[in-house]
Amino acid sequence: MRILSVTFLVFSEILISSQDEVINNRRFPESFKFGVATSAFQIEGAWNEDGKGESMWDRFLHNNSSKTLDRRNADVACDSYHKWREDVQLLKELGVKIYRFSISWPRILPDGTTNKINQAGVDYYLNLLKELKANNIEPLVTLYHWDLPQHLSELGGWLNPQIVDYFGEFARLSFRLFGDYVRQWTTVNEPKTACLLGYANDYGAPGLWLVADGVYQCAKIQLLAHAKAWHIYDDEFRASQGGKIGFVLDTPWNEPASDSDLDREAAEREMQFGFGWFANPVFIGDWPQVMKDRIANRSKLEGLGFSRLPEFTQKEIDYINGTHDYIGLNIYTGKLVEYLPDYEIGTPNYNFDNGNNVYCDPSWPASSSDWLFYYPSSIRKLVNYVNEKYSPEEIFIAENGWADHGEIDDQSRIRYHKGYLSNLLDAILEDGVNVVGYTAWSFMDNFGWGAGYTHRFGFISVDHDSPNRTRTWKSSGRYYQKVIRTRCLVDTCVD
Image (cartoon, rainbow, N blue to C red; front, side, top):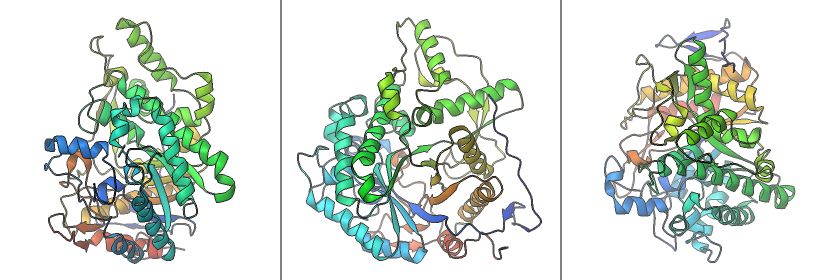
């Protein structure tokens, strides 16, 4: 299968940065929406206040502090539950037109079921939404950003098919309660990473080592849950509320390590195992064929009479296929992919099913995180690939950001966003890809799952050692503020 190769066009009006990078000096379209992103668990804190229930991440971290690099948890995080008015004013000063955040499922449904609705939690989100509206900031609301109610986790979490119905009820309640203020919804954030980190190892909640089969069951159930929420919105709320609903997938851009046919094949397989795993069922129907073939073959050689990749029924295929109004992309970096011979048959493993040697070019500038490197053309290549292969109605960049150790004068973050946004603008203006918005990760320094607070992504610094969780502007925040105001990445743009 062909790997898309994007040829970068250089026009006469260009400016060169101090790193000798070509930065597009044209303006973003007036319709393009600039914003920032967060998630409830990572910023809200107040983990057990005002009737909120326990999430699986609360339990996971309370039971074992070693799960984060700094042995800290999100009990207080950025304390945005109490500081939401201050945060909205910072959003207003930043100038964003859209703010992506998530609803904490256990904050409004303490045990995850509609048996008990926590009015204090409902009021928190209603107040936030009203304040955003008063300041002309559009919300992009994520229903599920990993904080599954602990009660539902104990029922089996994303391995239990009944969670689809519980999620549907949560989604229906959210649409009913908040739909008058929300025109853009995301069902599930990064289902691939949620499944791999929580059901393939103990890096994330619930910490189950089910790398041979649990990851695939998790994927199927999250896809069905996404479809359930989409159909509920489409059938019951779209006509009256007039919004859009999609989901958000994360992936690096996987580039062949060489021009060899084997490396090109490996790079496409890497895209299918990591991205097509979820995109294909929604945009095409069914799992990617390469996954079906490889996992079925390895399962047979392992002595099984069935594939470890659970089959969809035709009814399920039809139910999931087409459940999209847009696609959200979380793209941070690129990877090089080198072909490897198939692993010997032994202990079943998702990574062995896929194969490949995946790495980053050592010449790419590194962030403070060992997985994140500066490769700005990756965003242009990815949106072209997605546009060509899946033809989504719209593409929205839901996360894109840079990690450091908390520098206030964070020039490396400015360089990162300038380079990635320049390539994104190239994709829009030169390649004709319909990218409609960008919510940078992140609005403020927040809890980083297994990284704790050791790696910072925010435009706004948060002092997590201060009882007040003091907010301080970074240089990157001021740069992004100017980009939003001028729609221009450099000092002077060509209209």
